[in-house]
Image (cartoon, rainbow, N blue to C red; front, side, top):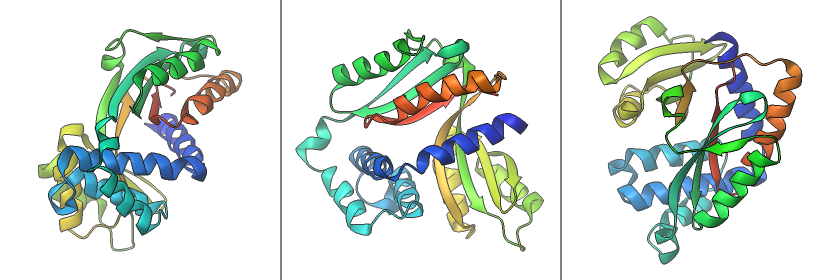
Length: 236
């Protein structure tokens, strides 16, 4: 995955660093997970992972518990997950995942980010084939870690491949294997930093630095929106 991997990772870390936005987004993820699968993390892999990701970002325990409690209130009933697809500057393809209590507001905002940057939304489903939905687990690599042995142990749980960068490893599997793969990491005592569902471009495209600047300008606007949970592109 090379340059595409480096770009996605750097861009993602840069955006997760916006701490004022991170906690509300993490809380919404926890609330939605608890709403859909129950409030017991042991019985709800998605909730368990959402809590783990929140702790990795130093989200206070009180905030996590409040987000879980919120899932049982009337406010949670209004929340729904919606996806938007579009083309941005220089033809970049963008997939936007949102969690909102007002789809009219959200679609108007997302549409405006594209329009103001020379792009536009496209019909739902248009870009599905341009991305592969994957379970991505970020984990620590210690001196005792044997990546080849780990691959053999985890392949029966849905692992497709492992990539490494310095002391951090990234395990990839089909999105349907998210629950079994994250549980396998837990059962085997492999220290997980973060686990997410991501959309990986099937045909990454290279853009020059000037084009990337234009693209990043639009992505920053999209990701600053409180309703936006994740953004994926076909940048190579």
